[in-house]
Length: 196
Image 1 (tube, rainbow, N blue to C red):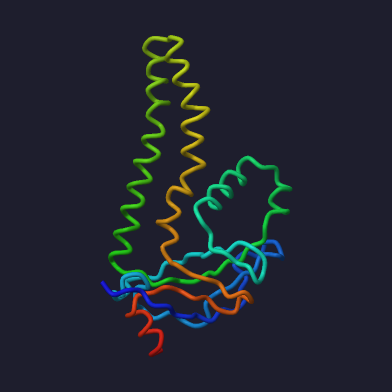
Image 2: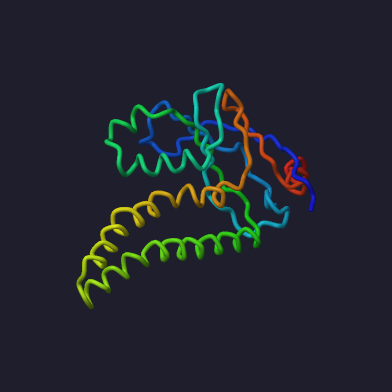
């Protein structure tokens, strides 16, 4: 396997979400990306619209990590609305990233893992409900309460962090002024970008 190389993509301002706060920098890649998979270097079969998020203020942007994804998912459900407005600003880079057949297979495997993940989280709740239906007891009631109050909410809030690596397979750094994005990409993609 060829080691990844770095490629710099120019960025320009673009309104991804018109309702986003003014301190959120919205960017897109200038020009079309070559039809070569960034990760595997194979010919792309389709583009996938995806966002890269970077946290912090201009001059100190950092890539989004699993901890930040978990915090944002919990905050969006539990925190009052005013917390959203005082949260740390971030930059969003939107683009149609080229994906190959292997990327599609990886996405399908991710969705299967998500189904299993939520299925396992629901098992204690379903067992408790079945127990309560067949023969009501304190143990059956306790199983329902623990799964409803602890296990399922934990699974519901934690899944973005658990699957963050699957979504954020692009290793990227945003320039302090937001003018360019530096990606670690397959050499075939870097060569195709240089030829365009």
